[in-house]
Length: 178
Image (cartoon, rainbow, N blue to C red; front, side, top):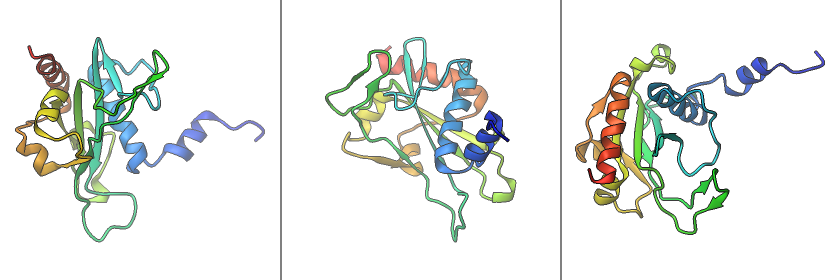
């Protein structure tokens, strides 16, 4: 072999879809497919993960089961820390840390048995959608993570893959105050 092949590289580097990094990117892709924007390329390190129209979407993922040996299921937490985001369209970094997206989509890969998990099966995922306005109103910006229980306590209703687009648009409307 004198020239590595792209498919081989992808399988070597990203074949474990349950690993934290790959699962996070997969969750972004799953949300992008639900929104019908999976034909656009992912921008690494952008201040938000996806954009549909003028709505900026931040995608977070978690799972009970990890790729490494576990003695118990993982506690579900999602990162919500404000950051000094970089805007890929202007090449400018923010000067203050903030939650830059309009909507947060918290994606939970909910299976609890390693042998039954298929991260590509959207029916194994549950989604929680919340406007950033509501998140900022109820959760101090100094808070870096939120657990599943506290997230549910905010009144966020779970939704399926098929309900995701409507939930994101509803949260975006809430973010605008409409």
